[in-house]
Amino acid sequence: MTLSSAAEPLPITPRTRVGRLPAQQVVDRTALYALLDSQILSHASLVVDGDPLMIPLAFARDGDSVLIHGSSGGGLLRHAAAGSGLGLSVAALDGLVYARNLFDSSMNYRSAVIYGVPRPVPEEEKEQALLVLSEHLMPGRGQEVRPMTRRERAATVILRIPLDEVSMKVRTGPPSESLDDGEDHGVWAGVVPMSIRATAPITSPLTAAETPFPASVLRQCDCATAAVLPAALH
Image 1 (cartoon, rainbow, N blue to C red):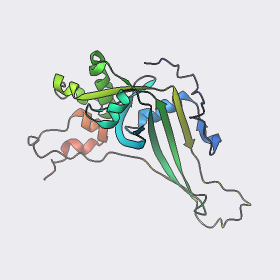
Image 2 (image 1 turned 135 degrees about the vertical axis):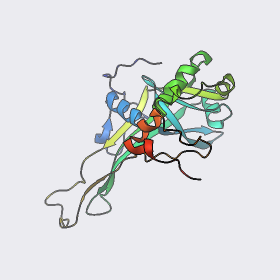
Image 3 (image 1 turned 90 degrees about the vertical axis):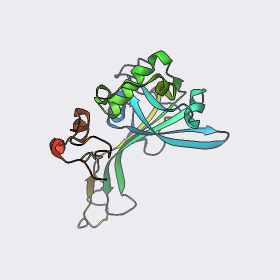
Image 4 (image 1 turned 45 degrees about the vertical axis):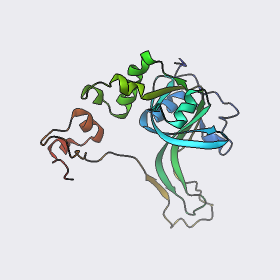
């Protein structure tokens, strides 16, 4: 694991330099950490035999690196584990920006593209890495279910990508406007905030009747009434 300080800015390289609207590039590593810690879905891409390959993957930040995992038989992860360079994209949509014309309408967002050569997590570190992933995706769930078996661990590949080369871009605020922009200011303009939120959990068909929702589920959905909701009928 790399040990860059959170105060150390992200370096700008030929691959990470933002060409379009460079003022929106962010090199604050703490802002990158905040983005990664708030999201759970990434998109990984690499080139295999001259063709692009991209798949969505759950991920978690572990210090100054990110962890991705999947089946040991998966094509993309197998190529990445063999030393292929990888691109990992993470984005958060924070709002739709309604301008007074479609050309100037936009989105408020935070995005990061991580470049690097992933390293397989050694077998003796797999259990801890899986705990980091599970705690990011489903905090507390690891204490509520049985441990992974040796066979399950063997079927799982975990890769670590250092946060050494990252391009981060952010847009915030209202639409671009001015008093003398020639637009009709009687037309509404502004921002519609967007976010992902969990709703009431749905109990699986084979869960024993009257089984209460565990703490990890209540924490995830943030719904105080979930404990008294009936199990879903299927």
